[in-house]
Image (cartoon, rainbow, N blue to C red; front, side, top):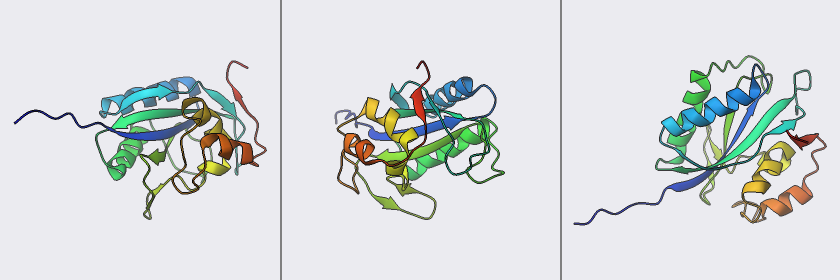
Length: 168
């Protein structure tokens, strides 16, 4: 019997931070995700983004990662939650300030609707801070539910939030 290498599942994660050393928080989250066995294949540059929903907080640094995962979507979510906890995230105000936030945006081309996990992320197509960095990694990627590319979703996005590359 020969060894068969199984290709990892492809997932996209959104990372954000608006407390403490935001860039370091994102860097540490990437490192911790790798320690969980995820293969960070691509990472967008950092984006400085205006808060959405809860406005009375500091601006965020956001980033999107393309990762290879040899685990299912629920285990991937568990890894993300463990990394958030390891880095000290406290959930005090819904959509409020946070040291680190990691969301599963996409996992292969599946559609999953569980109470604790919805894939594709239910608001990703409405959020410029997700679409801008995702566009740089996978502009032609098809949203499995909406059947539109990331490029098209960004063109159609009505989110007025200010989103710019950190070096701009």
